[in-house]
Image (cartoon, rainbow, N blue to C red; front, side, top):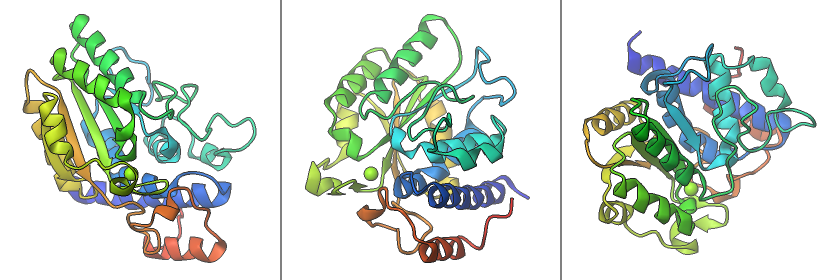
Length: 274
Ligand SMILES: [Mg+2]
């Protein structure tokens, strides 16, 4: 099986796992998880230098999920990769589970507790500066939401990333056009994010964030850029893959009933049997 087909199949399975985890826990942020999962899949199964058996290896690439409310998308990706047992996913969001509703660094593979929006980007910038200072060759990746761009600290981080010429940093915006209470343009207009980030000194690459070949080529191009940080402006669909969730802000953190769960699984090609 070629790499693209393999990653596409993986995305489908990860989506089903997200639906399963959200349905059983009656928790999670399913819409944003489904928009961002293809990028997480490519990061963890192709792009990043990581080792599930040695999650703290010194020269590992770092990933920060700044839009931390889609923690379940990160947990299913890490479990699939072998950072912890998939069975533990059944404990998501339950009492005394370490798989809480935002990334928790007690979980192997998670660098930082995140989810207070606007903070993760600065953490990633600090890690990338640390890498440069220590003359390490690891890379740092951070995924933000588009609604999150309304946080002022995002722009402080962007300014610093450019000032320190962090070509070891790739920031990603999951540009699904929606946030909790409506479209980003209604709530706090973002207008043209390419121009904004370019004016802050970034190398901006626009991709289809739900298309594996487009994501692969975005990361490849980012590696070629020297002397400035890269932003992958990833155009995505909130709720991608589930008919009744796509482009619907009410699925930011909606809870599925049994019928909706069945429909979601049907849309994704059948029940999860892994
Ligand atoms: Mg969004």
